[in-house]
Image 1: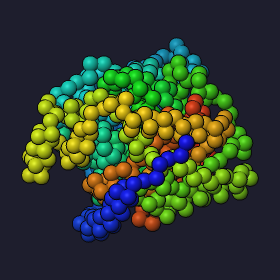
Image 2: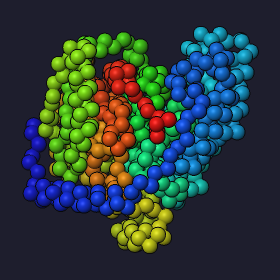
Image 3: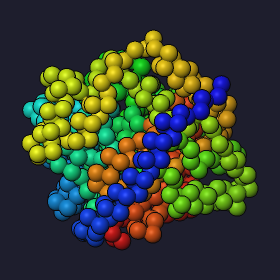
Image 4: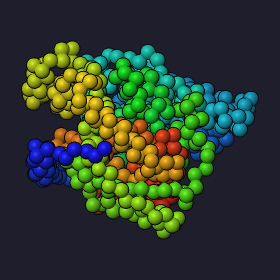
Length: 524
């Protein structure tokens, strides 16, 4: 099965988009100039340690959970005023839970070995995004009409983390209804990149990307339906993992899942400063499914088959930045020099159709507009766009444009839908045959480093580098590979076969050791 050639219209529109992107890029640069605010450096060493090491120190009474929690809270307070990532706390309850954790450890009834096995994250503070339910906290998802909505109970992933002893301390910012890759809404405002405040943080787990980058919590939990973990990880220089489909429960998120097919593409996963934490957090949040992931099985790096591709070659998207290509090539060279692995370059044609495949696989019978409007008519959307221009709308322009573009009624019996679902199946099979049990695929997480605020309106389809992996259901990890010439994070994603998340984690740890991993923003 081969993809049909692109029409003249598509190629012409792609050319026009490229010209518009180049022209507006100059304007964005002139407008924002050097308006950069700097986050204060991290003073407390505990924030520069992996979550599993923090947990070990708490268990061994080298530091108390209350002390770690207080350090996280102080860090949030001194950095949130600059980057606006944290939107709601549960500090009072968190302190009670931290005290309970410390008391449990101090009373000595349970051995440290038992606690490490049964409560591996005991006393460790973490955060999650404002779309994953936390009992008693708001669940607005950046939508003004939901500003009074309160979660009645914890999402299943939060329940599992609490059972492991981890302490949820609050919520981080998201785009409106989580359906854009810049974190901005009219309830909590815009979240700014800690490396350069004129740049975006990604979305939809954008606030979570920032809090991990600046050290505001020990680890984070995001969700990913089109790159919502991996893009913020890429833009903020941290690690972020989209698990194998169905490896983590999606119950307790908003929007609610009405169609089980959504579980094939939407995933909850960890966001961390250190690669070593990914496996341990994944084991907790996967619950009973973890047995399918064989996370304890040792990965022999030298036995990996490595494949890579520099670009998806698709129209309507930015060219891959030369520094990102160079970073990917350095990874290929690393495997060759250290392990004598001859990586194979691929040119998978169907990746050119990433946008069409993802748009069809993610389509449901409920429109985006129906979630943000009581009356999701064309007239209502047009009125809101006009109000937005005047600064009077409760909705962001990005959300309104998504609502406008999502008006076509979903028809699962249409020839178009059937064609691209068949293409999805073909591409999944192609990847499975390539990856087998020991293969990994290296691919750009995003074609360019963090754009300026609002620039995604011109680069609306760039997220397809991550989104296509959601459509296929494979696990994928965003891995930081240093900073570019402008001081912005760059990196790649590594993809493995179904249930081979451990390969992604092993490669992440290998590249962290080789290239340095997370870098504190602003040279801290």
